[in-house]
Length: 260
Image 1: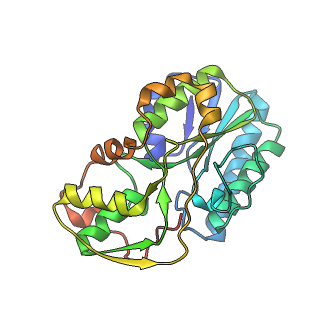
Image 2: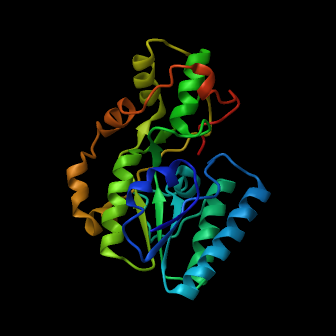
């Protein structure tokens, strides 16, 4: 595969670079779920148009990463499925849905994956776990009341992507997540235990909680059953996350929010 991008997800996909030669992976663009930058959104739209046009010209498939976060599904009642209408509730969610529609209209063969919250080494500081670690070390963590997040280890995500591309679904939108939304308080509990410290918790309203449906994923990739997804899966994902020994290396502004 050809990988467009050099960030966290692009680097994580490098082991698949000699497979799936019919696929171009767009692993670049807006990855900050709290982002609202019109300029960043436009750059991703322009890049998607360019890469999609290349795929149309060469007959290759384009793999695009969207989101299954509360920004996309926060207003959904019941399990969040890919084929039901959604009304995004954040600028990031609106942007990602617009990118999905732009890709569908481009004429390129494509696959869209709506990702849960990835966990793994080398994450940028604005993503969920590095941000929480930074805030806990600073002694104060801000939590939106009622918020929950679906964590999935990036290594498991790469395994799922490998299987999906081998089965070559066309024009599909697929949730890639564990299917278990974990209250943010429990994520903080586990990180505090690993760090050996406790932080003051400050609560804000406007949390969002939803369950991501993985029925389509499990149908397309039966091997998901062997990845250990379940109520305690988040503990394994968190425990595999490397804690930077230098707190300054993982700092993120305390004003960062947990409202993906």
